[in-house]
Length: 261
Image (cartoon, rainbow, N blue to C red):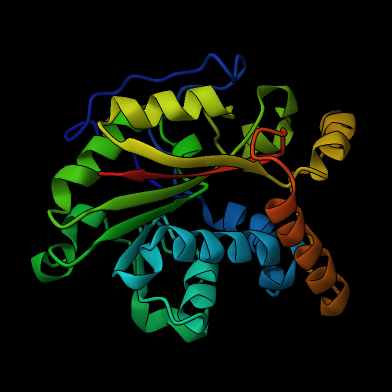
């Protein structure tokens, strides 16, 4: 979720319709302070990460992506990669920023690296890309997706997660450099503009929707790591079960989609 907007490579076409007060910026990767605020030590034990990691892994297996070689672009500290590799999924990552990488995945993450600058041997073998809460940070997501397709010749599928529902916009979105929150039609349209064929799209974190809507004016810019892991594991399991049981169209605070390249 941490990407520079490179004018020499992509056209700059900011889309601010979901963020009327968002200031234009050409730098959208996290600063050191933002990493400290959003990724304090131990944050991987938070229920939000437990749930999202499990939903991502289940979707990868469901769609057949779990059997291929995957690249997470904008991988941050490596929380998703750590979970996927524990599940037996071959995933590596890169990030333009220099985040504090989790020790267990240091050898699988390339910090300070644009995906187009990875070794040709690495890029030529990537069959699937993960963009986990990344697209909302990119002014022109369609051009960004098109660039990914051009840089990875073996690419077959792309999985994305994004924050959902414009009405949930809060200081959190402003602080962390979001350009938009998505609904199903807008995410489908953006993937389609990049020439991707949608195979799955659905909301998740349904039960969080009401709480976030009611507290959106009071939301903090920081998050605390859990003091006790067990309650967060149980809550995360509930959100994973909710994802399986509730209809895909029911609004939630996040969206997940898979598309063919």
